[in-house]
Length: 121
Image 1 (cartoon, helix red, strand yellow):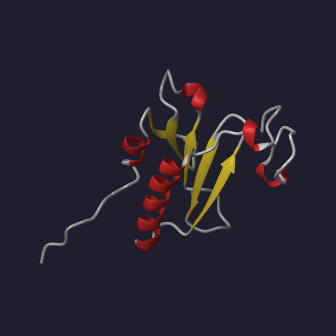
Image 2 (image 1 turned 120 degrees about the vertical axis):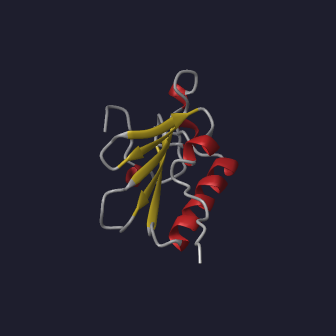
């Protein structure tokens, strides 16, 4: 963590300190619905098992886990500071590689959404 960031586990809610909700980047309802829709499909497919959401001072992070005891296999991040340049949304792999970055969440999440597959008989 860098100077000035608050660990999500240290935020107790309320108050006007550095962890107050007004000082955090969050996902809005539309963004969260899209992310959770993808998450539900991947859980149903047996690929993902757990998630965590962190609202930090400079970005919001939705982490996806194969097992809750492991490191996240993907992180879906929203960083408003990059909105004008490369896009506010990015998908980051477990190794730290930025898999896709863009201005629209829908297009960025396509890299993870394999969609329905057809089985030939």
